[in-house]
Length: 204
Image 1 (cartoon, rainbow, N blue to C red):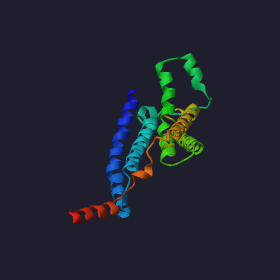
Image 2: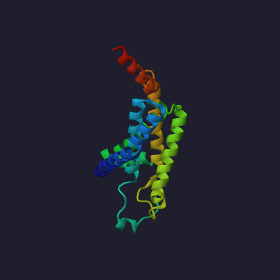
Image 3: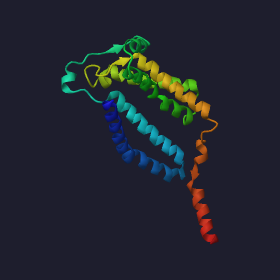
Image 4: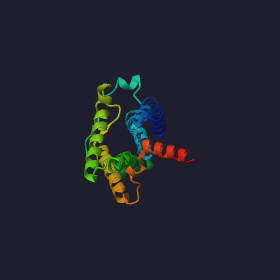
């Protein structure tokens, strides 16, 4: 639990650097060129970037120590639904929380794919599957062969649970589409806003 919190804190710090160096300046340039700004889309996009950075730090950090690197091997758990027997044999808060965490990890991903990307539930689920595959391959190969072995276990159950999370997230948004705000309705045409402001000034 402590390592997860420290990974999230690291993710927030990394995001702050990315936002300051890239996100905010790029958005400013985009607004100056297009003269349009959507505050809701901007907030969601920044939250999504923060979320993705935190996902990266959660699944790959903390990095192994020098002592751990010397003993690394390639680890793969390839038995589907092994978590069920694991919970039955060793029922505890940790084992149940691990399963729920792996599902919850990708729920926001599925939500954004549906809400912002406009994907169907099927497409959002498939994209989530590919994301999970990338994560598991990264864990199996020691952060894509940076390290000589797996310092995190590549688990087929994580693949299943992460994909389920994306599916649930997209379904949730699909069910709530009638009450969720429409993104395009928040689009602000700054040229029109400026013209209206000038008209009011001259009227005064």
